[in-house]
Length: 225
Image: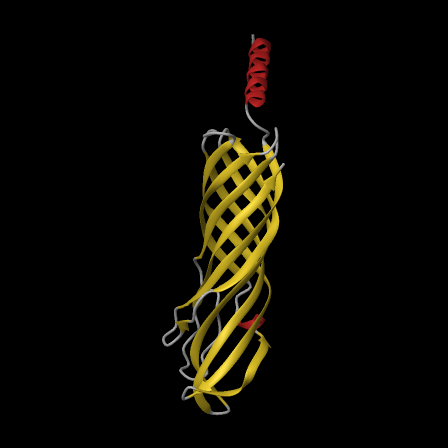
């Protein structure tokens, strides 16, 4: 009896596996992004958005039909700018800073996909989290006293002013287009919302601890095989 049950389960699982798509798809993606810094320290202000990009390897691991874990390994070039008060050579003023940073990110996203809508197109939605590890960071700075520029545009290493890790919540949506039997083109948008503080240190004028988060929105294009 137990042997018949095992044979039946084996045949059932074989039929299910045959009916579904591949359990795993692997590919490559590129994603231009727009990043910005949201300071949380008094008198620190966001100073606009800056462009960046990312590239990396991605994969969809299917749990059941149309539900997958989307993950991979991505190199993110994330840029932003903000301004803050500080003191240089005992002279109080204001600094405008442009951050250039590079992260290695590992996302873990639940991807929910519709059935084919028409002509090989299907729609998906994303929700998940990601851990990013900082590889390097630098800044271009301008120091002003009473709105007058002092010195030149200074470039400096700011690795010790950003935390080593960056944790974020991910929300996204997009479309798949079937190119061949097992090849898909992927287009989408994703919001990467930094949920923990990434700035650190103490302001040398006010003595306040420096806090802030680093967000970005990206447009993704990729191919899965």
